Length: 276
Ligand code: FE2
Image (cartoon, rainbow, N blue to C red; front, side, top):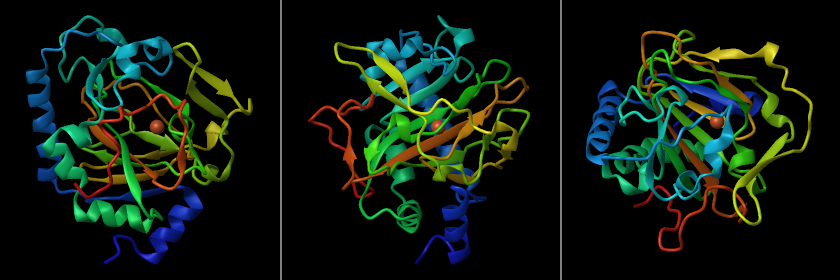
């Protein structure tokens, strides 16, 4: 059975974004929230790598560059040096879906696999997962970008599933996007440099027409499908409420995943699909 109607498929093709309210039950969201609380408690993590898209110093750090097949902790700029908690972390990533059974079960549900199939995947590989906290008062801005430049395949194939684990509103920093702009070529490319570190290469120095942005407010349980070339952004969270979200990025198995993408798996942990 298809997860999407013909109308929804056409809308996704046209806009590069699709909002599916109540795709997950509140209890399913709560299972990830409470599992993440346990992971934080168990972590005893001593790192203090800051994740900020406005200051990419974190990207030079080995902790980030080797996190593609691990569960690692990245802090908000303003909480550097703090203990890991839902009030200090920016995100946890990037292989929750393969390393943690609760997260694996969540993404490997039939309805999620069907959705991937409905948006065109033939043999999807689950590349990256992130638990995003956007804590009250200090949750940082995520600057305008598309996902393909960070997870580059030839041809482009990355798609993102963004799940609201809590209500995402304009006040607490919901996603915004530029519908239809996924039909444009990528403007940049983030890659590993020879000799270590990473770099952002500009392919097109024109700006996104951000004045056309629309908010993607999403109630708890909503799944937002984001095309890998759709420009999106979220503001800092200046509100009193957190904005927890979970994201999963998939690529097509037949597409060539570049060797200089930042996210790499070790040979003993190859990418998997929806089957366990
Ligand atoms: Fe993104």
